[in-house]
Length: 362
Length: 125
Image (tube, rainbow over all chains, first blue to last red; front, side):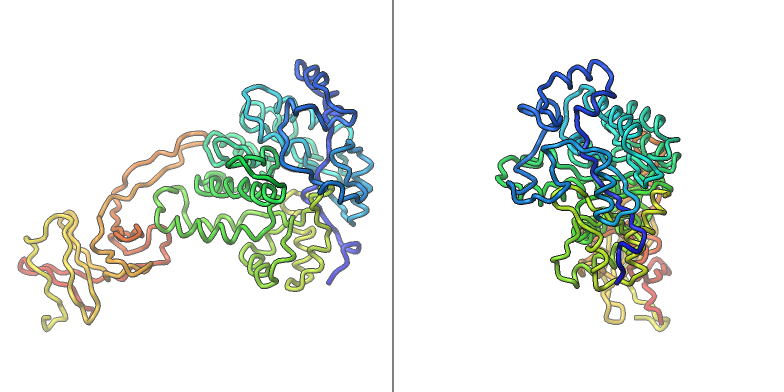
């Protein structure tokens, strides 16, 4: 066993709880005025009837039960200092910041520019006020991928920014799914820049993520996060994204690890019966998927150790990235990795830092 | 069975295009298939679930080519022929017996000989 405090720890999924009131200062008109005048609360994260970004079932904090420090989402906007405090709390040396509000972008299906305006302003805000490689605080550029042109503009904007380490695609709400050729220009550009593509599940629209009528967060958060990542994992693989862009690093974030072997197994059964429907694949889908990287959070530590060990063996400890999801309600501390009984210390160090250093070029 | 280890199937001219005939080769059911005047023989047991693979259809393999980012994958039927198990669709290259999805899975094949208008399967002895 190792002590996280004595080793390098890279957190690949930290959610900067950005506020609309902070970001709007970096926004262009007419969206600046639209956002400002849309009745946000003082913290800039809650709004009457959610005019712009959709919300989802239930209260993340389990209706007042989760009270820990730094967990004040969504009642208070984040400040850059609190990222540093949280990193100290978790013994994290370097963190990859992903916008909290961007997680809802996938639920926006309107053909206007609210997500484009948000993504661009978020990046400017983060670069100006939050990110600092000297402090180990890095970020990803959230892409409003339904708008290819704007997403390419964003990549042009950030490619020489040392604090930006990749592009983030929110997997919830992508229509068509992210293996579609429509997104090829984004993958091509990321491959050119050397940016990993981080497919991050999302929480917006969870109430009716596939069908309406779920009642509790327990149901929608269990199913919706999985469905969002699973759908893109299948689409990206079957449509041959890793064959089209062989130097592109692909990362899937925030659905744990146990879903992947099950999905691989089902996909392989289908593929063996219908291989001509994935004509770009030169090998089995599993051989592509086990080349992807997976954020570990929320790691299923309560699962049977045998099952978890099998998952780690299938995915490979050289493909797992420690992710906290901090400060979200279901965050994982580094102990989820350091306390695992079935991996070696070298594997713990790789998951906690080594793999991320390579993927994100830290 | 002949002295040379050849198992007689039937007259070549009695094979219709795409026709198959099943024969016993040393206790193994083997399917002989005619496609474009060529004959192929495989063990008639699909490695997937034991289905009668040689009784399935022969077709040209549908392939795709990546022609550039953002472009639709160009689909076409290649010259490669495949035979598909009628139970679940597992498909094998007609020339090699290799599974289309995984060339590590190979349908055992047999040499076919046509002598004096008669089709034989070489039993490997």
